[in-house]
Length: 275
Ligand code: SF4
Image (cartoon, rainbow, N blue to C red; front, top):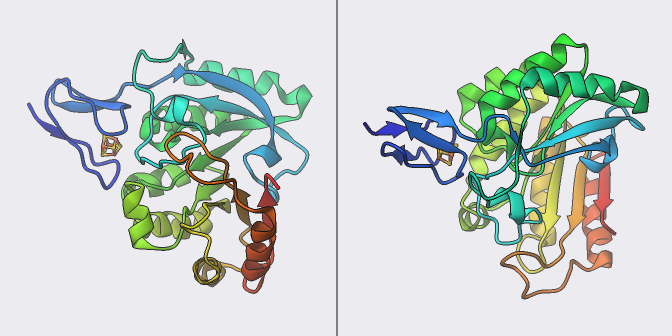
C-alpha cells in the first residue's frame, strides 16, 4: 500500500519498502517509519560554540549525536559522507533515547549540558529526536538542534516544545537558490519565525562565492531576521570547496568581514566563522 510522508514539503509518496528522498524514512506495511531511529554514526563531546551557538551557555560542552540522511541536496555539503548516506552504508551503533540521556548526564563533570542533534539533518529522524529530547529533559538537561529548518509546521511546533536552543541554516535569501538546493525558502523562514517564539535561536549562512554572497542579498536576509528580533545572532561562515562544488575557491576572508558589516546594519550580533 502506498504511503505519503508528511514530515517535510517533499511529501514523498512511497510504495511498500520504498525509501524517501532523505534516505531515512521508508514505507513499511503502509506506514512511514524512520529507518535511522537510534542508528548513531558518530558521538562527540563538543564545545557549545562549535554548533555554533555563541549566546547560549557559553563555555559549556554538549554531546553531539549524529545519524544519516538529509532532505536537501546542497552541492557544497560540508558533511556529505553522512548526509548523503543511506541505511547500511555507514557503521552505526544502536543507542536508545534513555542510553543517550544517561551518556549526556555522565558528561556533566566535563561541562556537558545535554544533547545536540546535528551534522546530518536531525529532523528526518524526527521520532528519535523527540524521544531523546524527552529523556534528556527528564534528567534536567537541555536539547540543541542544528537543522536546515525544512519541516512541516505541525511537527515543528510539537518538537519545539522540547527544544531549548537551535541553530537554523538560512542558506540564502532567494527562492531560486533554495530551489537549486532542493529546498524551500518560505518553509525555512516559517521555521525560524516559530522557533524564535519558543526557544533560543541562532542562524547560520554559509557564504558561497558568486551564489549567495551579494551585499543586497545579505542586507535583505539580515533585515528580515531583525524584523523578528534584532538580537538574533547571525553566523556568516566561510565556504570551502567540497562534495560537488569544487569549482571555486574558499570564500574570501575580506568578503566575509564586509558582509558581516552589512548584516550589522540591522543585527546586534553577527559572527564570522572559519575566518
Ligand atoms: S522527511 Fe524524507 S521521506 Fe519525508 S517527505 Fe521529507 S524527504 Fe520525503
